[in-house]
Image 1 (cartoon, rainbow, N blue to C red):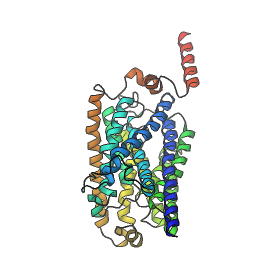
Image 2: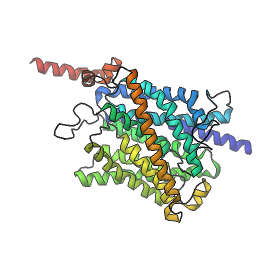
Image 3: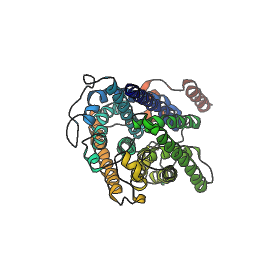
Length: 425
């Protein structure tokens, strides 16, 4: 029986890892659909490249920096993972690897539609080696200093989402807004994505993959607790969707589709930290607030002229902060004890857990942003002093300027021919 349970646990964790890996397909459709047609192939190809880079860097040093024997700041063993691997260890390694790849994909959002491929390639290695692993070690390793303080982050609202979003923010600031995004009069110009159907399908794939992300983080099938985590995940996602739709409808008079989709993602990001710690009613509340704040956040970043084409800062950053804090508010005594933590504020836990959660947001957010900013400046020097493509290349589109072919050759070329004909006439 014991051998059977071990087998089932590892089978479940492998399935969960595959679901998390499938989320990259969701990101391809979400990000390609949220950007313009002339950059769609670039977005798709770079996402696959992300998985490749994250896999090799995690194997070489990432896992060792996170889970190797070391100190409260960093792990210092188990590099080039494999000599230490048995079947069980390899399953956990694979599962953790897929999380590292998701964090890097989120960071990529800061480069969208204007970053050089060479710059992204260098930064992808540096982020995967020196930013994500440190935050993950602090929170998820046995001897991490935030773990010792009792930080709760079941599946990564801080470790994955906030870390990736802060790297995206650093890239966005350095690269500056896309051409034509903001007028001299302060007007925000609409550079809409080219395919809302792709975006919606991407969100649905991410939604399904999130059950591997959250429910898979149970690590096994004992007591079917993964079903409870899945329930909370589903409720928060649904609540975030509805909340975002009605708020943007009330504000704009139209039920904006991209904002509604971002509400679903915000609900998922928000519940990621606390999906194993809260009651279902709290999951609904967490999702609702996540859906509401993503709408406000999207408008706030535009007012600040921070150009975020795929809304990584709002969806993964702001919602990640809320998700982290919510754990210190809604965690029940029973679930907190079962998962190694303290009850939240509403259950008589005082401000202890909420304080630890807030500290982790500040420290991890500042570290991820600051370290990413420095590494991006290093990257900038390595690629010739600018990480951004030229104006001509940005106007042409990164599909052609970076890869030599369009993601939609028939559509783009026919449009170019039509425009040339009009000019000639």
